[in-house]
Structure formats: C-alpha cells, structure tokens
Image: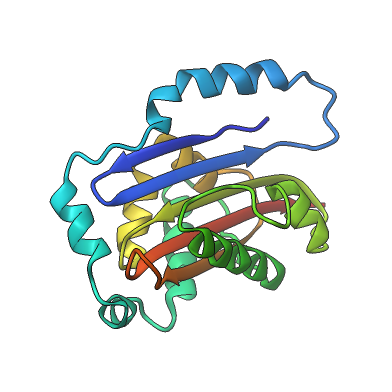
Length: 198
C-alpha cells in the first residue's frame, strides 16, 4: 500500500509515504487512488501564514545552519525512539545504508527545490533495494522548512500519517538533511527512511 499526503502548516510542507510488503498479492491500486482523492485538498500548497514562510525562506544559510546541531541525527533518533517508547514500542536502530539513502534524497529535493518521494534513483522501494536493504516494509517522511530537529519532529508527530510512520512496525531508520542555498536562501529538506528488514 502506498499513501501520500501533503500537509501545509505555516512554513512547513510535509509528505508521508508507506510501502507494505512488495510481495503482497492484495490489490493496492484502488486503495491508493481512493486515498489520494481523500487527501486531494492537502496536495495544494497554500500558506496561511505568509510572514512566517517569508521569514524562514529569507534567512541567511549560515544562520540557518547554526541552529542545526552537529549531532542532529542522534537527536532525531532519540526523539523517534522516545516517541515510540511512549507507546511501548521497540526502539529503532540507525542504519548507515538508510542514512545514506535519506541524505541522498534530501540532497535531491534541495537540488530541485521541492519535496518528492521519488528521485532520479527511483521510488522509495527502488532506492532501498538498490541500497542493498532486504526489506519487507518501508516508510518515508519528508519535510521542507524548519530549523531544528525538535521543530520538524513536532510537525511530523502532529500529523497522523507521519506519526503512523514513526510508530510503524520497523526496526531500522535513517535520516537526511540538506539546505537549498539557491533561490530559496536556506530552505531545509528533511528525510526519515524507515525499514523493516528480513
């Protein structure tokens, strides 16, 4: 099953994607089409707080970078696992292949100046398979905007589809963060990749 939605809150754009077992024989197309129709209104970005968006977009990259700590991946892992712990779920382990995959995806989004779940390396499933991950379930959260791990995590945790990915049946995770320094002057692109491995 593949679920996609775009949520706009202030200067944040968020997207969520889940892929279940690629070997499942259950019909998936109709559900995906239905889900996309249900979320169609969320797919049209429209800022309601233009001043907040402009303020973040116009920040100098150096100032934006200074707000992201050097150990941001560990902070994000801790936040994800703390939230999972609140629901009695097992902690996730950070995975180098997923970190690389997520970083490449954030870099790609920054290079095209927009969020997406597909990139030049293909879909989430294609990217994970190419990275050598033996997966039975995958999910991806992406966000555009925000200056801190706590800020982006708060946005994801307050979105049902993103929270579903954070609390999903996975055992490894990877994170990416890139800053678009052209045109949009320092917009951040965050990626979380989740996988359940064999």
